Each structure stands twice: as C-alpha cells, then as structure tokens.
Length: 181
Image (cartoon, rainbow, N blue to C red; front, side, top):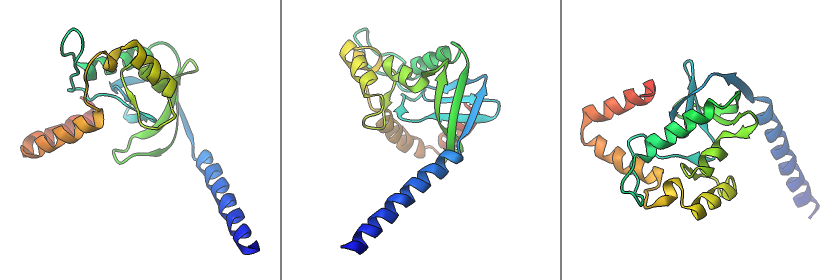
C-alpha cells in the first residue's frame, strides 16, 4: 500500500516537472502577421497554427440559406481582418509535422482562435476549449452553422485521397502549402 502511494506521488511529481519544463520552452512572438488560411498565420518565413480550432480549407465550400459559399476563403478573410485589429502576440512551445509553431495567439489581449470560433468560421478540436463560443455561433446560425458543412478534417481526408490519384496535383498541393498560396 505504501509503495503504491509513493509510486503515485512520483508520477504526479513527474507530471508537474514535465509541465513546468514545457512552460520554460515557450516562445513569444510579436510581429506583423498575415492569414494563410482560417487557422494558420504567418510572419516573415514562420508559420503559426492556432491551437484548439480547425477552420475550413481554402478550397472548401459550405451550404447556407443563400446557397453554397466559400467558407474556407471567408475564414481566411476573417482571420486576416482580426489580425489587423491591433498588436498580435503568439505563444508557442512546439512545432507540428509541417514545421508550424503550435500557438495561442491574442490580438490586443483577445484570444484569436476564440474570435474565429465565435464568428462561426471554425470548429473546436479540444472538447472544452471554446465551447461557449461554439455554442453561441451554432445557436445564432452564423458562419458554418448557417447550413450544412463538412468537418474540415473530413474534407481534407476526402480531397487528399482524390489528389493522390493525380501525382502532379498532389505535388502542387504540397508546394502551395509550403508557399502559403
């Protein structure tokens, strides 16, 4: 019994130490940013992926009361306008497989990802994060919630498979992604 308690205590301490070390690796970036898509921003040669959200891809369209609309383009335009509101700061402590900094960003103290979700232009990837903003957008039927839409991850999976059938198109997609087109 005593050994079990000591083991649990050591595991807990290990978790606390790991969390502290992750915090020490954080980098803060403050710059002029531009929107690459609805959940990715860039400054100079660096890219930042907003944590906790998933926005439609640039070529993705969604249904609405007025018919189909370019929801991916709308998400990028909204993020771009949001970044122009004031001073943008991003805090990151690791990169994803595309070498983008995984970041929490603010514009004049407001959470950028939360603003995109509140506008109805992104879904959440973490259960509790931005739940209030998501519920409000859904209730108001704004953005993605104004009609039928495919989850961005499902849209990517479907279109990635289609691009694999045409090797040149797949290569061009990779090049476009790297260059931010």
